[in-house]
Length: 374
Image (cartoon, rainbow, N blue to C red; front, side, top):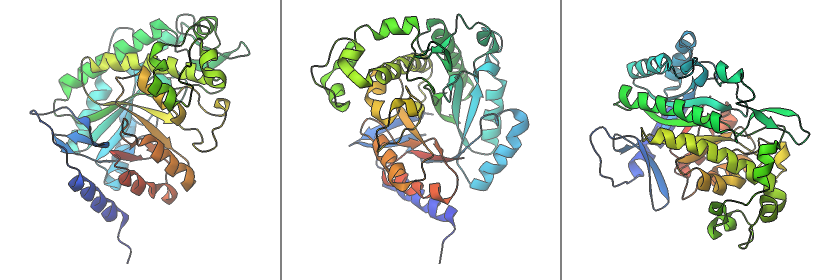
């Protein structure tokens, strides 16, 4: 006899929660946090392990008129968490003036249904582009430029070398995190995703004059530590410029470092006012064939540059794979690669259908802290 899928999943979740033993000093209304013990991770909510069995809203589904359909889907799924975007262009439509009405609506409706939230900060990057930046930034392409491809033409992806854009994003994100601290003392929000699938399509890195000057400079000392070079399969005596130190991987490594430092700066600004867990999600590359960076979204936290992201963005709690690989060998390899002693496994996006549902068991087996359906 086949048990209903929802019952099987519930039993599995109860088993995982019961089997996790985490000793921690818990304050009243503690902030959700990710803990590690003996290379095992857990998300603590109200001091207890919590597995996110959740649904994700589509890109433009957080607007109030769309939310009834979203909540209906969450109730049908019997999910305990909703992953939902919030938009920089809506929150700071006028520079320096913040509107948190969307955030407040989400908090109210989630509490009414006794569902937790994971908020997605659609800001500088959303799937490699900057389409959710405020209009006042889009109108000033000189101050907030996109990257330049190797052929000298602009690419539809923001430059990670623009101080003004980075500081504007950090200010807005810190305002969001500060508002959550005041408006959500019960911690309806469990985690926040900083950007969405950052990186660039169509160019491995930024080839603008400013970027090229940095690329021809010395590799930051943070990346030349023996343990990082070993993790990157590079020589222990690697040094010099990016090209000298990393050879054929130099372009991608430079772009990953640049984007991670940019997002790490934003994350640190948010963490300074609110200690909620933060993560960044990855548009994946093929984890087995080691393809050229020109074939996938370069610069994001793909499996081959996780050590770079860890070094560049310490304020980010975890890096998370978006799994749309239905091939079992590749999907299971991704789960293995992102389940690390220094990285709690969390799958924020996964394809729909039975061919993807089965990977919940692999996430549980690898002691993941949650999986989102779409």
